Length: 205
Ligand SMILES: Nc1nc(=O)c(N)c(NC[C@H](O)[C@H](O)[C@H](O)COP(=O)(O)O)[nH]1
Ligand SMILES: [Zn+2]
Image (cartoon, rainbow, N blue to C red; front, side):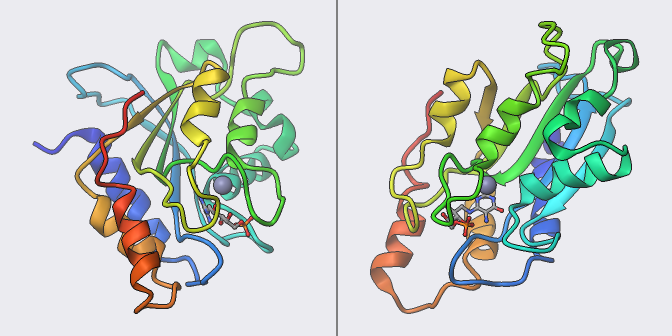
């Protein structure tokens, strides 16, 4: 059977298809989920906490940003303190808070808006500064960010430096890139090679 990781990345890819194609960003989908992150990968008590896709919310918004903002809005908190509304340790019952996203979270954005890695890190700084780390435990993504806009992506490194686990899940790269770059002008052989090339190399933690 297909791994749950690929199952959820396929769900994220479906979300990404709702995103309006633009030459200036990527179409990405994200799902925030509560689940047991067990090696055998089977768990019945998964709970979807929120979803998001690029430009779902007004403005130049990213999938991960919309996912967190949607959760915050439905729980009556500001996005900056979204983690305060995350399930308590008791409610989690040993499950982890995972973020599935079709593309590596951005470490820098050409627009200068807050990168998604910062938003993910922010969830682990709970208001009362207790180190109960009630934030996102791990990020799963299906492609490294291509070099189109920011060159060598820094997202993974920044997550590692912040002590947040991440894992690249192979198998959907071509589909994810095709959706992500639908708004990019075709025929630019250099750009296409660049966008495809970055995902051939293996990604190591
Ligand atoms: N992980 C991720 N989720 C998204 O929803 C999205 N659009 C990107 N895209 C990354 C890319 O680096 C930025 O889109 C460009 O750097 C332009 O920056 P803006 O998006 O205009 O802030 N990356
Ligand atoms: Zn982003």
